[in-house]
Length: 152
Image (cartoon, rainbow, N blue to C red; front, side, top):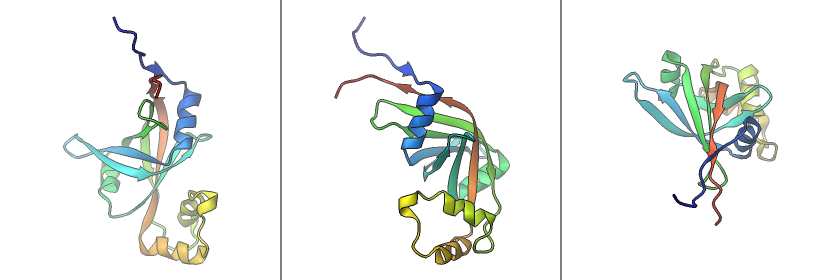
């Protein structure tokens, strides 16, 4: 036997905290073949509703995958390589924002951290319409992950 540390499961609170501290993760969707499709995504975590939100455009392949099969997972690395969290659930796809300032546009705007809000909100909302942006909402029904207590 070795004296090396073993992975320890993280509590739901610790997993939620890890998701809240990070901004990027790997979204896994299911391709028609059944294989995973992985995409690095900027995300927004809402711990209260257990929902991960992603901004994307209507023409992305992940939107096609989720339209066919809503099962998805987000893998997020902790602050070091020794911890991670996975959020699994079914995703729903919003309508495409069609009018600057509509509900979807406002939801997309709300996903931006306070310090990064656009200077010209109207121009930003128009850009979202031009890009055919929408929201992917991953309704999380399972969280899991581990940490490995390694020094250095």
